[in-house]
Image 1 (cartoon, rainbow, N blue to C red):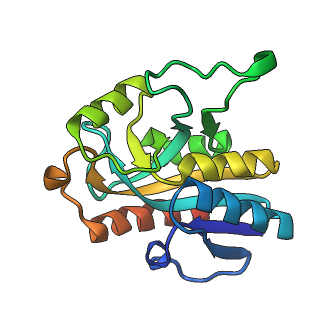
Image 2 (spheres, helix red, strand yellow):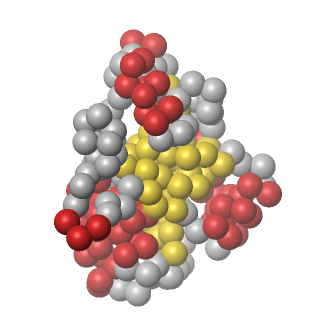
Length: 198
């Protein structure tokens, strides 16, 4: 059984039910998705988690309406300066999680863009923050759930992949070009291609 997880009902609008695939609406943000997904993975032994939804793209990474595969996704867990936290006994934070490499490669072969993600709990709304995240994390797209979904699946020992439809550019909201329908079209294309492979 495959689990298709989206943050909100509207992101599942493209989905046509099929055998072997369950859906889950997790709620918005990293805490909601990690709680909902972990609970569901404890309930049933899924073989694959697909985290799907909309995302913003940093300049030059993707266009509004594109469907993209997020190869790896990061989350900022550090001091405000960007320096790492100093934890006792040499413990370290986990700041990056990865999509299943085989599925990423197969979608790359199908000519879908492969990008790096950043997960935020607060949507980027300034050019300064967009530049910092793109530079510091080499981020190309931004979501509010990707890292948490991939990491929860990783901790549970389940393969996972993150796919996104691009709905806007990251930066000032007035120039973001927000287009829900275009983002959903991109999500529909990438999700259909993925489910032909699995």
